[in-house]
Every structure is written in C-alpha cells, then in structure tokens.
Image 1 (cartoon, rainbow, N blue to C red):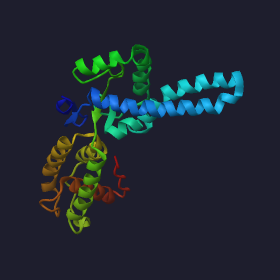
Image 2: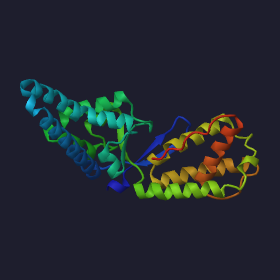
Image 3: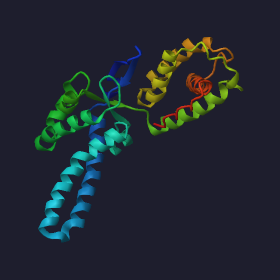
Image 4: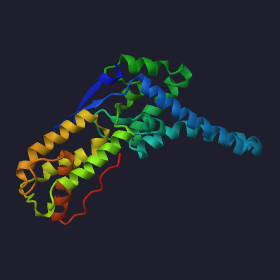
Length: 254
C-alpha cells in the first residue's frame, strides 16, 4: 500500500501540494543503510582509540553516542532532510506543512528514537508507521514531521534534461518578454515551487507546474503559447530577476 499513501499539504501561498508518504518497507531499508554506515564509523572509532587505554575507552563511548545521535540530525538539517540511507531510497524528512525540517524538529524526532528504537527493537516505530494516518512513528508525532518520497536519481536526471530543454524551448529571446504583469506575490509562488519541486511526487509536481504555467503564461507578452511548464517558470523567474537588477537564484539540484 506504500505507493498509494498520499498527504496533501497546504503551502503558505494557498496552494495544495500532494506528496507520497514513505511506508514501513522503504523506511526500513533507509534505516538499515544508515545503521551500516554508523556501525562502520563506530568500529573505526574503536580501532582508532583502542590503544589509548581507559581514556580512549571513555572517549569511545562518548564519540559513539554522538555518531549514533548526531548522524541523523546533522544529515537531516544540512542535507535537506536526507541521510545517506534516505537519499539512496528516495526519502526525505519534512515538517508536516511541507517546509524543510529544522534543528529542533530533527533533534526531537531523533531523541525519541533513542527510546522507541534499539531499546524496544523499533516496534513502536513500526506500529506507528503502520497505524497512523500519515505513516508517522512516535518521533515524527513529537516533532510534527513526516517522511515523504522524492523523485529517484533517474527521475531527477530526466527532469533536468526536460528543464534544460524547456529553457531553450521557452523562446529564442526571453529578454523580449514583458513580465511587468507578474506580481511579486505570484513570483514568490513560482520561486517556492522551484525550491520544493524535487520533494514532490512526480504527478503532483507536473500538475502544479502546469497549473502555475497555465495561469501565468497568458500574462507574459512575448512568451511562447506552449512548451514545458517548468522551463517557462524557470525562465520567468530568471527574467523577472534580471529586470529587477538581481542575480537569478540558483536552481536546486535535488
């Protein structure tokens, strides 16, 4: 049933985004990958401190705790909600409103993991993912987070090719576009979509891009009447930034 688990999130701009929730199986695989990496790090610490006697042993226990706890927090906060295991399996941790996970939320969900994880054989986590409406383990409930599916690496490469082609197809001379009718609020919605699109389910991403492009394209004089929706939105954002004398924002790479 993992593929059918969806959550609809309302953004501050009033747009509803539909995202695919991660199920127990994919989360188990991601957690297994992370545990292997953490195990390797702990063994490396042990070997490095083995010759340091009692002091080395004390340092080992402290460092091991930091590895087991800080690993998830650092990767989730600095890696846009993705540990290596989650990145490999195409998962991401976000707040329940779709915003990026922050330090407080990540620390909360991982502190709870110290209780409902290894000490209880992860049974509360498994039960929580299976029975809660949004596939949340106890840590997710405490931190108000959810784990969603992102596009796979192959899908990201296809999307990148489409976006590259979209910019070229958006028009031979975007500098001639008249974007004066696009308001700052509408531009903020476009920017928000560009920043979040890699966290969306492919179907939701395509539908939202089309909805935005269909609504804005008729108001941009000189823009082509058709073409890839995301390419149009990217070119619109870059053109508007250039007219305002700003540097166009870097597009996220996933």
